[in-house]
Length: 413
Image 1 (cartoon, helix red, strand yellow):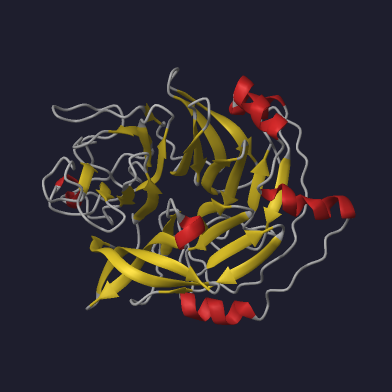
Image 2 (tube, rainbow, N blue to C red):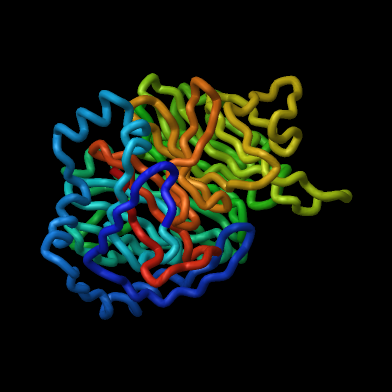
């Protein structure tokens, strides 16, 4: 384990889930088993693994609880600076299978698995919860159960929103669904948006609720690059809707969910304290281009998302410019880092989970520089900031080299 400029301290977790899951690499991703089969095979095997010492047994409570003094200190000197001065890593959950999104409610962390189901992590205990949708989960390549965000009033209404792949008359698609947690099962309540283009790769799939109370989603162009510039298509976009699934009256295109376009495979959304929306996007992967030739490689991006803006794919990539194109805030080099989930810190830096980059990175919007914060843990799928601590989901069971405890939920402090 290697941490950039820090001392590492690893603690073990309470459970090791043994969920059988097929994994196949496909454009930085993998496939997984269908949700129903996975839940059925796993439910009987969810048994606690005793912790090694009494001092570690208390680590479950540390999952979401941190002292007021530590939070205040992190905010005062800057969360990233405090981590770089001396980083500790707590392993809060193990045995996750292709985890994708995480959300927090009280002492609980909810984590989606692409092959199906949501893992509830609560004070060191892990429980697999079924997600029952009216349309069967499609799991292939990068497609499956991905995006997940809790309703702003989840503590009272138990509502959340998921982004999942499905099939309609042989056509691969994605949709956004409102679900409710009832007796440990997430049950579909309402389909908010269906017919989002789907495929094996470039699925997008991130969900987030903005400061304006609207529901935002990222969609990929599913390797059909022409969709990104087609404003009538839902592919290769940032989408925006109410939590009831309606088109907001102030969306940039009348009667359209499209909020921004010209994206390839955006997988991260985050707002800084001033209301600026950032999104990560995968750059070209050297794939063949229709008509001959191949893409360039790398050129992954961090973009400032503005209403109605065009981010250029596939007309331009990286630092290339063209009339009417909004340039990225940051462009990686020709070697892919494959940015996925992102999160903002109290000091308005952007944490970036990277898959191919196998690191947690920090982007500074002021200096326009990106640097490593955490390395040596393999592929990183998602990152979140909660109670003054940074939470990280590894993604080594999805196209990486998994260790015996992968995948894991890590806490950095």
